[in-house]
Amino acid sequence: MKVVYLSLTGQTRKFVQKLDMDLLEITPTNPYLSIHEPFIVVVPTYEVEATEIINDFIETGENQNYFKGVAGGGNLNFGNLFVFTAKDLAKEYNVPLLHTFEFQGNDEDVQKLKKAVKDLG
Image (cartoon, rainbow, N blue to C red; front, side, top):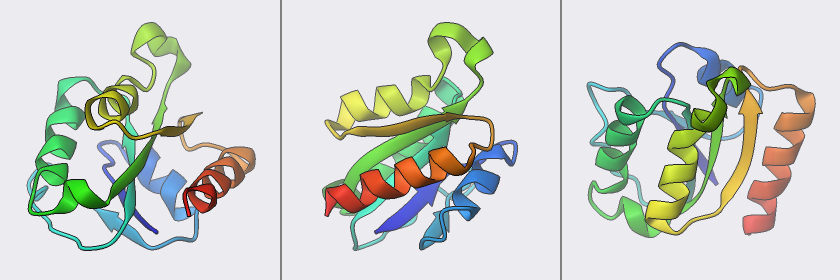
């Protein structure tokens, strides 16, 4: 399963690199990539900035048909906004929220997300 991610500060990139999975980074200047295989999305906690970029990606070509789940990273100090983007995407596209983590995550976060992806099939 491919891991598509957005990293605005570098924290999400550092986390996904620990997953040892097939990665695809989308950027604010190039979200319109089309892929034809199942994927999950890993996003940071940012309201509009991240959500709009990921929506553009998911709605490009047939991507929505391959979107299987989402994970979110952030800072617990954000309160109710912690992993807002991931929760919003899960609800909007009716996919599972697979895992949430703080900052770059830790070894337990990596293992939990890998297991969640494996359980998706």
